[in-house]
Length: 98
Picture 1: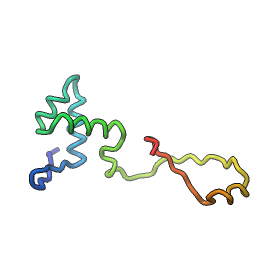
Picture 2 (picture 1 turned 90 degrees about the horizontal axis):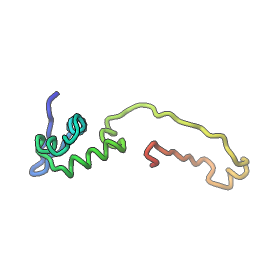
Picture 3 (picture 1 turned 120 degrees about the horizontal axis):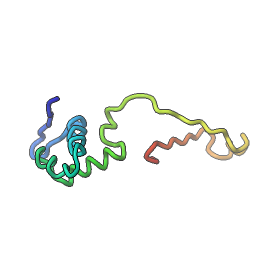
Picture 4 (picture 1 turned 135 degrees about the vertical axis):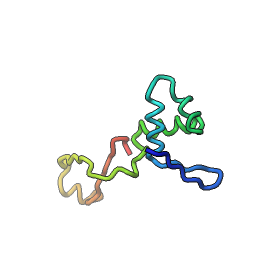
């Protein structure tokens, strides 16, 4: 697995695969975060923000394609009340409450 870094001038752009590899490496043993950041030429702050994104399920999310389980709850109001409220409205809540 090679490291792919896209250079756009002074600022580097990391692929999701590279970010995931670095985050996984930082979790490989206790107290590896700072050493991993140094080895990969990134700041501790950047690594910790990637680790937070990973914990929240946001790192690599753009690569994920597929179906998500859905729960349909029975309507608790009468059909007339639904028409009075935004009929046809749907509310979707993801795992991270967004």
